[in-house]
Length: 254
Image (cartoon, rainbow, N blue to C red; front, side):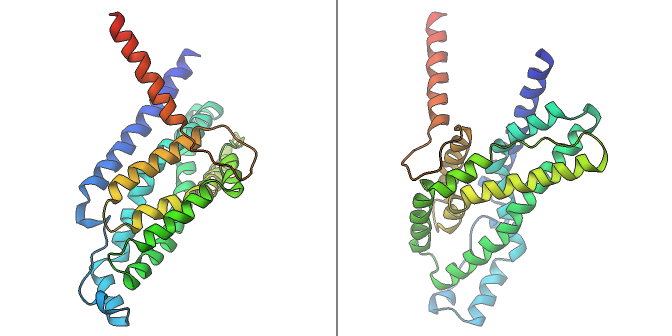
């Protein structure tokens, strides 16, 4: 039991460190991968020339790199429990590769969605450059989606931890399938929240922090009956407050 707790803590530490590294890349924003650059041509209205100039200034490959970095920065903490489940139920010599296949399957889904998201972002920035209107509209959609029974169904399914085959290619297939399905459930739950920061002409770093906090917090909640209901899902905040109180009490006693 003690050995498993050590392994669990090691998994959490590695995931946290990797997430922080990706966040550092996001905040440093090398090559402006997290912002869409505009020019005066786009302000005159959409046209083939203005689209080409926008793409010249914002290569699609660069947008996808930014999207992928954002996904790993924001989503890696949500993968801690599935990876722990993989390590607990897999043979020691196979654990790392099976966990890698799980993360790969998960990333494939988010990257595929990122293609569609970035096409939408380019189109909206072409039609309404430097406008907050697209972000406001997606924000309203995200709020409605946040309390919908459909989102709750996806959140519930995200708690499913599939039993993987123990041996051979079947274990690799199951791990990849597990990652793909987990990615689909995460996309279903959080697509609007993920798109919102990308559409902001300003303040997208702060928005990404807030969205990450919301998505991690809601992932920590227990499954609920899918229905329309207003729930802020602040479990992570409650945990942080409780831990802070404990530390303050401990410090006051020493």
